[in-house]
Image (cartoon, rainbow, N blue to C red; front, side, top):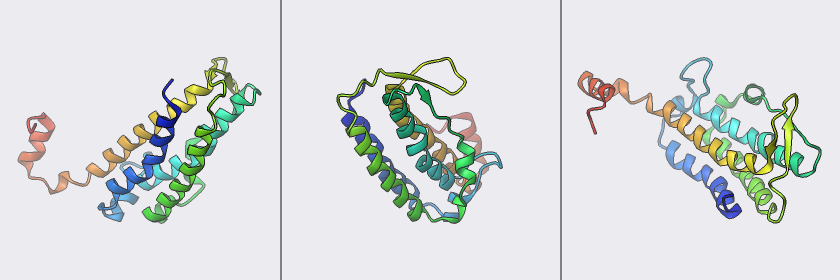
Length: 174
């Protein structure tokens, strides 16, 4: 089990990481989906906001409250519920910061709780521990950080020469 303080601090750090990474990027890039079935960076941030409560705090609380049933979560429903691409980076980061303060307080309050307590997703037989969702939360953030990086780095290759694009494709620039 990772230290709760480490997990809490990691969750709190993400809005600042995203701000430093995305502030210089053109707003059009932040609103552009790489493919119709993939999220743009602003939608990824909206997803992170929605996940704090429904996919993580609520699930951990359900396990710890002992009802044994872990609520489901449908990521596209959260994305489609709002027009995230019309929002500004500042609006979404402010909302994420607010969620993260709530989430960090939730994590901090878990000290002394039995994080080995388990429950099952509706219709599942596998048992998940509360600690599984706690650790997956930080993993989830970092996975989506990679997704955002993949989206934003797509806007550089059109400005490269053919030579550099070829070299990058072959991995010979390092």
